[in-house]
Image: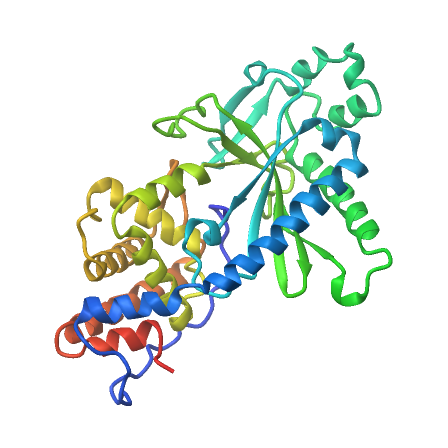
Amino acid sequence: MGGIAAAPAEPQAAELPNLENLRISGYSGNVVQVLERVLRKLRLEEDEIKRTNQFIDQLVKRDLVNGLKAESKLFAMIYKEIQWTGSFYEGLKISKPDEFDLNIVFKFPFDEKKLKLVARNDQPGFVTVKGYGQALESIKADPKWQPPVYTELARWTDPSGNLLQDKVRQWMEGITTKFVNNYNVGKPINEQLHLKKSGPAMTLEIGGLSIDVVPVFGFITPPPHPIRTPKPLNRSWFIVPKPLKNEQSISDAWRVSFYQFEKDIIRDYGRIKPAIKLIKKLRDEQNWQSLYSYAIKNAALWMKESGELSENDNTDLAFIKLLRGIQKYLQDGFLPFYWEKRGNMLRMGNVERTNLANRITRLIRNIEQNWEANPAYIGELIYPDQ
């Protein structure tokens, strides 16, 4: 998941594509039929999915996890499970399955109830984990956690006893680097792993595939107010060591993640998933680079909750409603983080945001003008029929 407070430089506003002189399109039928055809074109090939899954599963379960356990006794002792996240596993992927997101879930060496989570007012959507240092003292005499394991755990705290996300990331990067170096010994170039850092993730690349590996800690206790508690709270939610851009001194701020709960909402509620996929593809075709996927999903989650998106909506209605909703959020300059509504999901400055809102306004007008008279226009906007 992306952060919620970054503001990149303002790009030049792009013009809407000129589709007045469309060549003969392969799209036919009414709007629903055209959009359903677009969705079929976005569907991933089953054979490719199966082959990719088998390769990734083997690489992660056999090689990565076992390799990291061999590199670090601490990893072996606190490792809990692998959780796949991201658009591929939500059914929201609109391109070739070559990018994957992987959470490595760790368990604390003590009861999580010894910790106190505090929501940050300066960074909505982030928490500070207090009491880690004191909780660590409770296992200090246990032979199971003797040095060097205990020594490594102790490096993750500051003088106040808070859990430091940068220290956890550095530890994870260190053992992953060792794993990659050992994995590549004796392998030809085309079978070697390559490692690069990106935010909280380490990206493993091999054979045209990339896997973002993120260390996380899970909690089954409710998150601190004003972060909302999922209902039902029937599984873990997570804290992610996401570094805060331009604020490197905030090393005890952890981003909250409720991926599994979001996945359930999208899966169980009408046409939200197809609408998100259509908007993502439209975004890519129109080059709305700053409208990142998690912001689109957040907009859909809020509109579902408010009733603006209904489980009874057909594909066409869900699509245009979501597009209008995103335009409104851009116009207002604020898209709340679904789990902590003080956080703004829009990662752009005012000039870029206003330009994008205006572009989408004009695009919606064009879509509405062609809704019945020329539905192929809409299909060509989203997925040119090549």
